[in-house]
Length: 410
Image 1 (cartoon, rainbow, N blue to C red):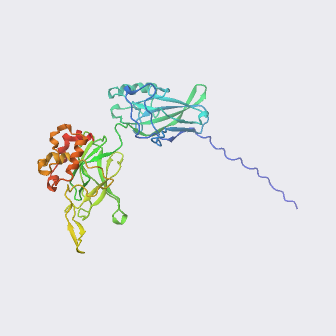
Image 2: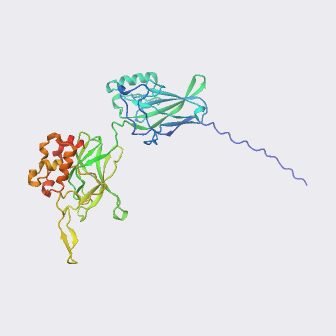
Image 3: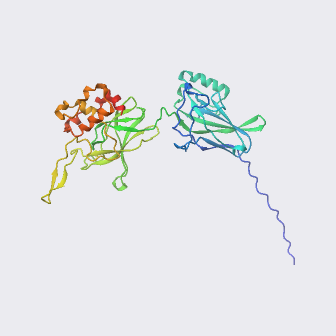
């Protein structure tokens, strides 16, 4: 008996919705390598460039975007927006490319470029504070905020940072475009003038007692006195308590390039041998750290312990006094330690130099004519001078204020 087989037609595959055109940022702008330009700095179409986050010293890269879900002619409008949420129009302008007009940059993208665009030669130009309101009014007339957010109080816009906004327009007919929402924002780009790299150039002292309370001076690149602190840390194994972090008390910041800080107490102030920790600058707003440098914390009750040596005539260890010299300098200099930049405070306020060592020139005879060679020669002579511990401990780092300019010439 023949069995009939019923034929069941195959169902057609479900129709997938067409891809939605969108902009994807494949390389973000570098947040801290661009300095916003003044109007007087513009030179034709070259005014620096916003680099990409993957840029290196020998290989520059630039912010890059890709249009996905669409293959055809399009244009991209780039503008500066604030870092608020939601973002507002920013008064600063984009310059540097021939396509830049009225503070905006309009780029054409098509299949010939693979629907990608690397934005080079694009810079941010600042405006004077007195012109901020006028600039925002003109910007609103020619290009409203793509997020439809009113400007509000212009004085509340942070002029030290911007975000780039990319808005996509698709060509529907020759010369006719339709906008694709929503726009895309980059990460924040900071003005390098106000966010330089954190660097410790010199230290007045490279060791302090474990009990804390010693004032030291750090020479740095430009820092914001309201946004800086000094971090001491030690990376220890977990069974020894893990990472130890403490912050020194910043007493003052002199002209944005010198930080006077009081060292913190170690978590074990009763240590019997010196401990090497790390000292760094830390920016409080973004927790950025400078390169770590070595710093020694020594026992408070015995700054330089006596060294045990073997007697040539006996097996009994005997103690030997440390070699003469300033006891606040390490006997064996760590290669990671910076050169000690004291000596102005010690030499200016110790007793007459003839009572210490006739080899030391009197620094007061130089006045403000102190130079690098003279100070270094004086410092080298002072290293072997019998400076007493009490004299050094009673000195204040703040006595160096009027010598800061000399120290910066190092």
